Structure formats: C-alpha cells, structure tokens
Length: 389
Image 1 (spheres, one colour):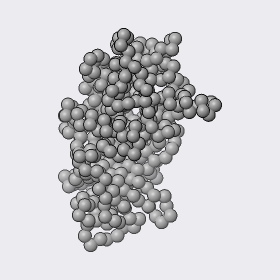
Image 2 (spheres, rainbow, N blue to C red):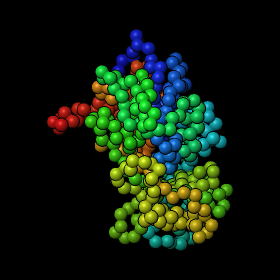
Image 3 (tube, rainbow, N blue to C red):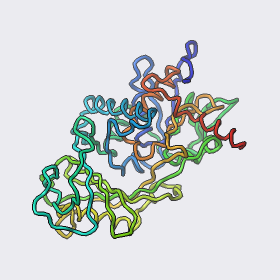
Image 4 (cartoon, rainbow, N blue to C red):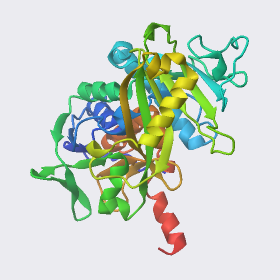
C-alpha cells in the first residue's frame, strides 16, 4: 500500500528534482501548483532541458492502449486526461502542438505495388501503393492525441517556475537514512529535504538506485522531415508493419505528422549501453537510411529527392526496467529520496500523472491521482530476496 499521510510532519520545503526531461519537468510543475502546499523546486540538469529522449521522442498520446495491464491503464488514463487539462491551462495547441489525431495501422508492402484506387480510410497524402491491405483504425480524436515533446517539456518546466541549475549530479547525500541534498559537480552540495531522481536511463548510475533495481537504455532512431507541401499533411498518425525483404525481420515504424508542418518517423531500435553524455548520442547511418526509405515508401511528399527537407536525424535512449513497468516512488531505506524512471516508449504520455502522483506523495504523504503501489521500487527487493541475492 502507499505510505500513510504524514499528518504531523510538515511537507518538505526544499525539493530538488534531478533531470530536466519530461518527467522531471512535470514533477516540478505539480509540486509548484500543489493546492495546499505549493513548493517551487530546484531542478538540476546536466546538459539542457529536453536534451535527450524528451526532446527526440514522438509525442504520441493514447488513452486506452495500456488497458491490458491494469496498473499501467490507470496511469495512462489519468495522464491522458491531465494532458488535456495542461493543454487548456498552458495554451498547448499553440505552445507545443497539442492536438487530437486519427490513428491508423497500415501494412507497408515489401515491394511497391500500383493500386487502382486508394482505400477510403487512407489519408490523401499517403501514396495508395503504401497500403498492402485495408488500413485499420487504432484510435480516434477522442482516444489519441499528440504533443511536440521537446516544446511540451520546456513549456511545463517554464510554467513551474523552478530554478534550473545546469550541472551534473554526482551523488545523493544521505545522513542517518534521510536525504539532505545532492552533490553537484563543481558546485558542492545543494541542500534538500526531498530529492527526485528523474534522469531516464541515467537514473541507474546512482549506487542507491542500482543496489535496488536495473534501468537500461533502448536506443531508438528517428528522423524529422519537412515536406514540400506541409499544408496537405493531415493529422493522421500511422503505425506501420514493414518487412524490407522476404525473410527479413518485421519492422514497426511509426509516422507522426506535426502541426508545425514537420513529419516525425521512428522505428529502428536496439539495446545498447547508454553513454555518459546525452549530447554525444548520434544515430547509426544504417538505421537512419532505413527510416528515409520507409518515409519515401509511405509518401512521395516525404522523399528528399521530391523536395522534402531533412530537419533532424537523431537517436535517443528510452529507459526500460526488467519487468516492463516504470519505477515511481520513494526509495526503500532512504527517506526523502524519490525515483521516477523506466517509462520506456510511454514517457511523454505518462509524465503528467507521474509528476502529479509524486508531488502528492512528497507533499501529502500519499498519491491520490493514481495508486503507485505497483510502481514502487520496493517491489524489486522482494524479487531479489526470492533469488537469494
């Protein structure tokens, strides 16, 4: 069960959030806008806000795609609703491209084929030859939406009023089992009554985290294109199935048009060691080339030889856990140290509810918006004890 409300203890006055990605930004926002105990935190970021996956992700939002896992379903549904409320409060449509979208599943043929006429569900900007079978509806504007993740992260962080410190957190300072601050390289110790570790796959670099659970990185590639006629691109997000050639591994690329006129394409991923500095992450040429090939197969509007401009070719690391669930809660044995990581490909979707729940846990003593019990880092202690570790 979630920890009981601390009725006699005053809420922490000095909160330090480590990590300037979407989860850290949302946590800062909900701390500062808490109804009873608004607390403006200090946020420490090594490079720059939204410099890693939070700036290079797709920004796709789905209400009910996690319904097969009850714990994740509750988190996703709460977060989808919060995205709507945040968009209303922060002018999301103009500030960071929030909009409802149509979502389709399309089977991309291995070889181009000419069809007599396009399927009526197929958006006009998608080439008729891009669909080997009738498209399937995966989501409607009531159940799927999108944001530009980097712009969303920066807008929420700015609205939080948090003091942003650019520096590398070297360790969490703990005395007698309680957090007292974080040591920042070249700056000394920043005092804190509560610390939130929201550094994506880099959260696992801290001893107090890796002693309890593992968080790894899945390297995901993406490209961003600006078509020659962006006004013709409708708000349809596409989930593709594509076999490059007979016998080859099936790929699952995704295509997200953005209201800015750009089109985001992703889908080549692999497990790989996470580098120390997010600024050094680059995409692998073969993966980037495959994404360009897929983009051109989907639409002639997305072919560079037809005038599409390359805005970005990039990669990032998605934080993953051994059991596939994010880790959200207070670290066992370290009072006042909280963690939020392991959201995999749903970090942009689930960041608002994660941040809101953490703010409640920190300031009220208990999360109300969603039950954090399934996400507690303490769940890994039980697994380790069963293994005799």
